[in-house]
Image (cartoon, rainbow, N blue to C red; front, side):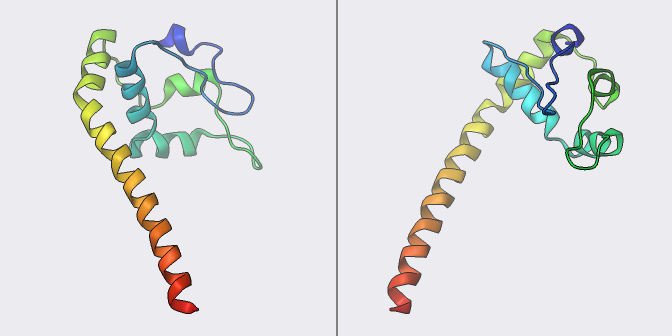
Length: 108
């Protein structure tokens, strides 16, 4: 994974990884959104206006040292959960829109 990360953190602070394997992307997404990773990233971040980390710092954060096949297997296992979460987000957005429309009718 280190070779894929090398020189991939853009000046904007975004991690520019790409993969044709959706399960690998699932793994990276879950890893980067974990509380441990976020906490360690915040501690290691530099800058005041736009906090960021460099490649070396990124590799020093909480990143389990597992094989590519293990990453893909993890991503495969959580794929259904990610899809369910997306559907819930869509439903919540629709319900918020309905709520807003109903409140407008109620206030008239």
